[in-house]
Length: 454
Ligand SMILES: *Cc1c(COP(=O)(O)O)cnc(C)c1O
Image (cartoon, rainbow, N blue to C red):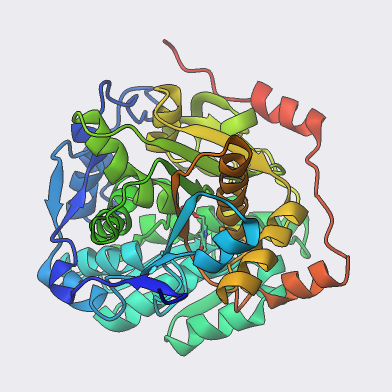
């Protein structure tokens, strides 16, 4: 048997539909509320920000939504993505478990994010939109949307959190290579940005402020819409292409997962790999244990409240029911920038509430240690976010060893770490430490959650 086992699907087997878990849930998630009226929002409330086709996907209860031909044509460049059996990692761990990983780092931007950036750009193009604004932290989402904008001829403007803008010039260069405009946020271009700069001209920025700037520009320009790279139902749904492919690839391998592991920032790569399997279970198929891994420094699923909250710090968004640390909570600056969000996708939060998934939190040093072990066995250097999934999968494999059980573990290797090598340099230099959030700040942020009539 060869050491590297790669399960590849024929291009013709790129899924033709996205899977919508709303159709199979035993109980629907709580509605999104307008913060002024406390009434459920309607499609028209969201129309200034998103094209109607995406708004309809956001509220759809259809099980399957067709992937448009032009989107499948672009997906074909890197999809179906490979599924690997991690044989050398299994050997290194001396585990009886079988470990499989779906590798999303093969996309042009190096992560799962183009899976939703491409359809979002497509639907905007179809609606006659010429400009899209967005925010980005570490730059993974910004570069994915910049790529999609280049493909469909849409101008992309990215508000990038100022500290990252200064610290991560390579992601910014990637966005600019694709033709996007990248501005450090807070910027002097918007009312939200100017208000912050008036108080502190050296403000380091935050995702919350960057969202406010991007939303403000989209809301005040007819030719401009806004795009979000995680959290929302339609974003999670676009990512289900990952789990559907994995299901077909595992069938080639003659296996079915007992355990599925993914890291969670807003929940999109995790939902992408897990929801098709959870759906099969809900329709009477095999039961699968699904484990979400989050950073201990930003633990929305394990320490947050399941409550209505704003999606941004400036409170421009509607209220969504989700696991949240409070919209005023500022997570400490650890390296997995993609996981530094105060909330969690409402559908992932709802799945936890229904007992369909479990959640665990890990510290960053143990995650980097797992990532290095993975790289030395499998050759792929994971993104700092993906290291959380690697750590979760390794722990499950070691548990199989202790219990003497041969289980099948599947995890989402959602991106490579080639733009994050400074984090690895810091790890090897012993400079990486576990960041801890401020308990009193968390308590204050949770106490400040908006009160919503029952
Ligand atoms: C953005 C990002 C994440 C976090 O977002 P999710 O929506 O939770 O998937 C995780 N990993 C990588 C590589 C990312 O780029």
